[in-house]
Length: 425
Image (cartoon, helix red, strand yellow):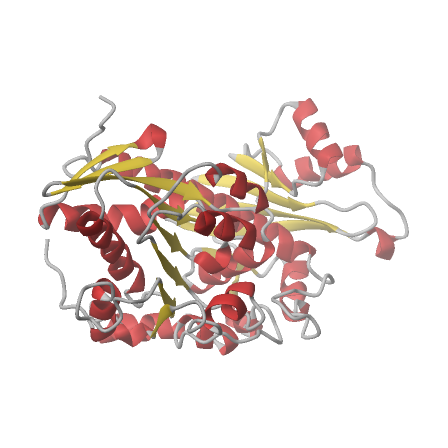
């Protein structure tokens, strides 16, 4: 496998703990900044190398937002490089563990998920010699602090990486602003600090973002967002007529309301692109009366016609409507993921990449795109809860297809076995 020469910042992230580096007295390293800046690979290789040279028979932790994302973003790129450098890696997928041997040192690295407040309980009781947090700004503070408290072995150290969030985020205030007090090395990455990205790819990534998200994900700044949530959707060219074709797969996404509007979108997939073909939007306040769950279900049937969807993705709080769909037994129901900010990021990326396309027949979705805005009066990333019902159902849909992509990625990882051997037989 061929690797590009590492940048000065990547080299510093990799060897900050080494004798003579000038930073070897630090207890932690924080690598933040732009997406695709090369910080994750450098830091994960640094973590394994440091542990393998300083410990034998130790337990260490890789922490990610989810285990699937951790495998895809950290473990899978790391394994071939470790192999070439002479590390022996045995992975037990069922136990979320890597057993890594280098020369006469052997250690176990456990994979932990820090997806919500309840995740802190998953790491209690274990004693660690070091921990790496991938995308630490997406993890709850309780989980991070519990993991740090587990590192009670003499010589233990902390490795953090993340993309920027809003300036009042707890990690920015507690760790980055107080890095000297925490005795942490801070390395800030911009996208152009990654020598493996060609000029063409740099320009492509730079074109994906505007406004505050450009400053965050390209320049690596911790800034607040304001204005329209999807400003690029103000261009009428983003909305096209529905393709006149047969679709390989169909789905429906639904944000359900009784007093608030109910929004459903019909999606069709063709050649890797999902088109929002038509919609159902019912505003009880505007119409002067509410509909029952059964009436909304009949509208779902009318939206689909003779189509048999792969899934109807529904707002997870809509328990009564989900029960009606399941009782009829005609359509498979998926309860949507409802992380708003992560969902907006994913949706923005999917729209800009052309992974999803909104057809000009979806007039209520188009109207909401022009009205959906950030709340500038809140200290963190928060959207105004108004004109957001089609926005929510679109976000639910993107969460569904991204989760499907992650499942496929995990299946692909399972097939990559020249570098992975299962230590449990």
